[in-house]
Image 1 (tube, helix red, strand yellow):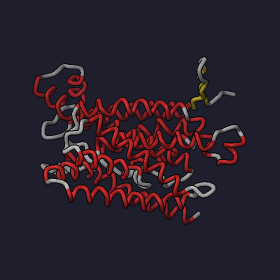
Image 2 (image 1 turned 45 degrees about the horizontal axis):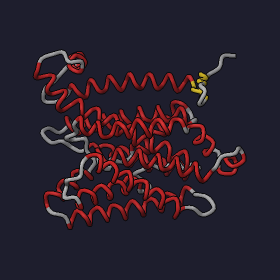
Image 3 (image 1 turned 60 degrees about the vertical axis):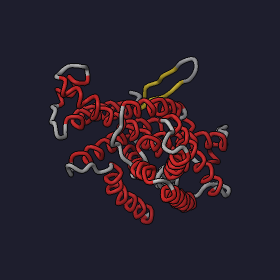
Length: 345
């Protein structure tokens, strides 16, 4: 019988990769590259996908290369990285908490990152660098995630208690951010408010460089811990019975999830619902195994944010609508659909 998995074995680790996950990851990666070409080409100056590819490799005329390198390609790259981080964070949270409604923006992680980011902007007078902003947002996200699970823990974490406490923390973090913005000078309030709306507007290669190490590092660690996430999805008793250190591993997985979300928020603000939608779409394609869901979720999350940003940039000229507006417009009905489906069960 033909196996449906590839086996990867080294001296340090062994890993089983499902053929279906490889197929969909390759297909979605090709689709993502095509989408980047289209996104970078549309706008006040139309550039064909072929010219985008030529420009990306240093060919074409000066005007085309300037538009691509200075404005559109860094913005597309930031959309891809941030969307992938948010989706991977949501996949981890849903796996560890065994809650399909969990996502970084629904349970306060995004709000914590945003509040910490606003605090760092206000306290430093806007002088904080990209690295400092990343560290602040990641610290806020991890702190809120730890507080959430400490408050929700009662011999286990029930999905309903997790969501209710998470909504309360998200609201509290949002209120704290608003309070700091109101008390800050006008120029800082404008800067912080624009950042909070969740937008890829103004992204540069410096922003991409600030997010890339976090995305690659935490994403790789999350993938290497896929087997542990799979075990936790079976429940605490089963995880403990197979030798899993439940509390320690759960804490590590949650911290990685929060760090991914915090890193994304530090660069693009509080963009919601990608961490909720992308893992569900991925499970439709590759099933529930976390090692398969993670890369497919990341590809889908990258595509969702890239599409949202492209629409925001081109649908209502000359206005540049934040990408978070479009993700919320799709994500809110999707969340209601999930609630109704769970109620039906």
